[in-house]
Length: 63
Image (cartoon, rainbow, N blue to C red):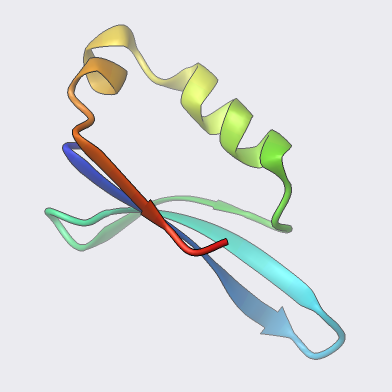
């Protein structure tokens, strides 16, 4: 993904959130996680192949 978007969405009342990783070029969701912790993103990025991570140009997030 050249351009990645990371956002949190309320999944239910009571402060339960989902973390979404999206491909902004294609408009698709690439990963979801059941909370909004750093470990979720660490795990996602660790699974990327070098070619995938080297191709990233921008990451947008508001967390």
